[in-house]
Length: 126
Image (cartoon, rainbow, N blue to C red; front, side):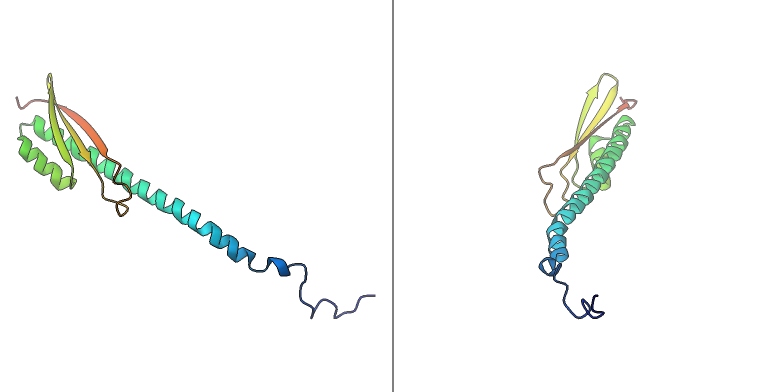
């Protein structure tokens, strides 16, 4: 027959070697989880910059098609997306605005990425 006090006051010998393993596993996994989270947030910011650049490029192309000068269109583009560069080309009866932007997000982690957008509008100003 077993003693009623057996096991109550004695330390658990089967789990003594695994003490603190949950903390160690958590400490090992946490940097990977944070890295994935940072990558997701940076990609969301990058997608937002691309959307803003594409929208501003379309507005710039329409502005050029209405007959606004290239300096006016470039100033409008600069007010919508800071740091964007504009290149204007004419193709038959279209005026096309090509823009590029090197975003400054992620504390300089994404300096190698250049976003580009292009939009054309029917040239009614010429």
